[in-house]
Length: 62
Image 1: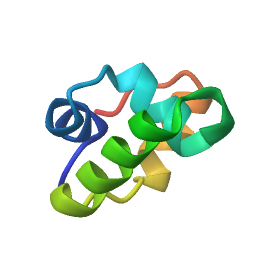
Image 2: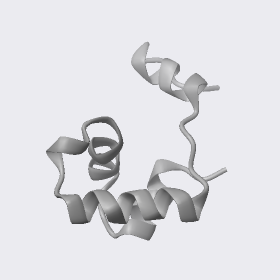
Image 3: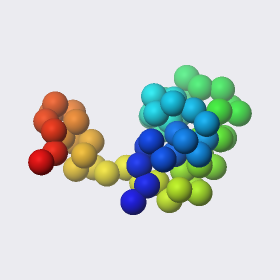
């Protein structure tokens, strides 16, 4: 399973930029957003809701 870090490496951006491009696309340039979207498709990335919920609750996985 691809991670946000994998997407960032493919797109040549930081994981923070990947997050912004996916959650707040208006905050990144259209060219960066396109690179991130292409990398998401290439990597087969899909958000892991369990990990996201653990992160929001400030818990760490076992």
